[in-house]
Length: 153
Image (tube, rainbow, N blue to C red; front, side, top):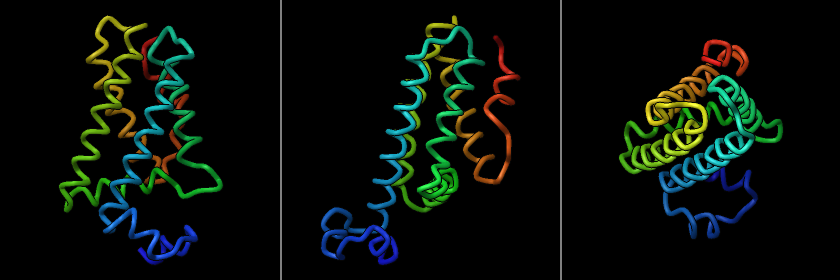
């Protein structure tokens, strides 16, 4: 936590006032990132798409921009590290599971405009996003356009 505190430019007292443990800090970072991903999904949905392919391409392009911001850490790798941490910390696992369920709900809502099976599509797109995150963390150059090509519409 000392390294994080120094890079953030805050005192130890300030850091521990908000995050009593490293687990608390990790959970808060994951929850905040999931909120940002939810906003990306909502923005992509607002653009109005007539197909899964168009929606997925726009959403993943925005996700790539958010996760690979030149001024910040590679959030794809951070996400995978968070998932690894969840294996030993039930609180982190709960934050991820709750956040993922909320993302699937947003994806389901987005799919209502172009799918007759929005719940199934939302669940599938949630897993597609998770797979994209893992592949990008591993260095894959798979692009949103490449993924969208394999979808209907």
